[in-house]
Length: 267
Image (cartoon, rainbow, N blue to C red; front, side, top):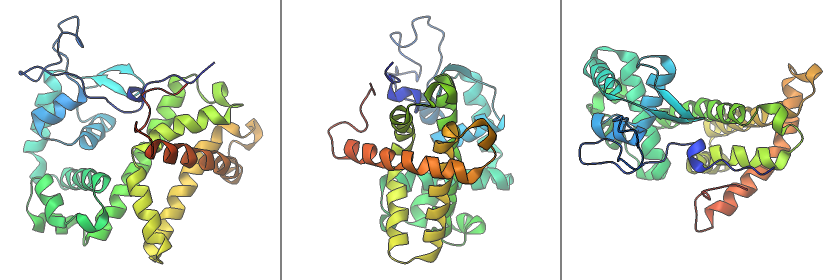
């Protein structure tokens, strides 16, 4: 049995949107006026990573799940998000979330040297001084971004694994599991490579964070392969997961030098 989830299984793929910001008839045949994640971003000006945080935290109404990691939103979600944003300046946790989300979007597409705190402040729609109220430096912003993505990556991997029958379904097929984790990791690879580069140059905080990231990913990937009596043995999971990680990065790097990033389907 092949592994056949499309990329949309792991990340929301933008769909054609009409002038009114709603899903086109071809993507919304019932004419329900449902919105995609891309629609919400366009309508509210709030980054996708922040919307995911709102959803996971229960700050907005629970959207309809269409697949493992794709949801259908409605006007009530637009209103809820705009209401949260209106209150953001008075809510330190919301301000911090906005800043981290803006930093993630910046570091995903540009190198560390190319990103400035001013860029992040502008994307977060706040003064540069407000950013420094929560993060003392750009270094702290990168760390917070990677730690946030690490949590999100492990959650998305587990959600997608569950949608395919859970760990038992892939327990004896490391190649398929590696492809599945590769889909999740591909989205954050630029930041992981940046972190690895800084660690290789002797930057101690980056080295410590890189070790944490690798260990967490290995433990996540290896958990399906440990026996029932080893489920609480983190070291056993890490050891099993490191073998999967080697395959994952080989696969993702192959995608990176190809013409499709990553392929639309894994078979």
